[in-house]
Picture 1 (cartoon, rainbow, N blue to C red):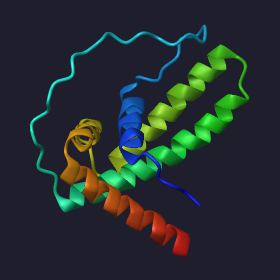
Picture 2: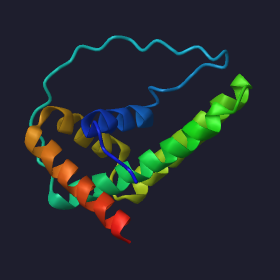
Picture 3: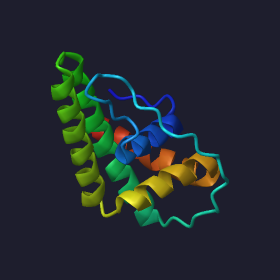
Amino acid sequence: MRTIKHPVMALLAAAGLLAGAATVSAQGQPQQAPAQPQTQAPAMDVSESQVENFVDAYMAVQGINQEYTQKLQNVEDPEKATKMQQEAQTKMQEAVSNSGLSISEYQKIAQAAGQDQELRSQIEKELTSRIETEQDS
């Protein structure tokens, strides 16, 4: 059974993973990203089909993230860990593309969901519905 405790944070984390923000150097040290000022994104018109595609991509990305997080826990070789992270990132990007969204669209929707309560509610509703459907089958 999957539970959604903080779907907005998970959405933003998923977008960050796709952007490569979670890469680790060969020495196993996190890379420092340059600080970027937070700017208010303009309201984004997101259709119902885009919300559905976003949820498809999000669920696939989360599955890949969970799979690779478990795999990486047992990896001690930093080079192998980096390769696995790149593999995971590629699979996540493919999952987003297969959902009918570009990486840029996925990231924009995730960012907008962090700032737009109505969009966030639409995504959470669709996500909850999908998870409940999965649990019933």
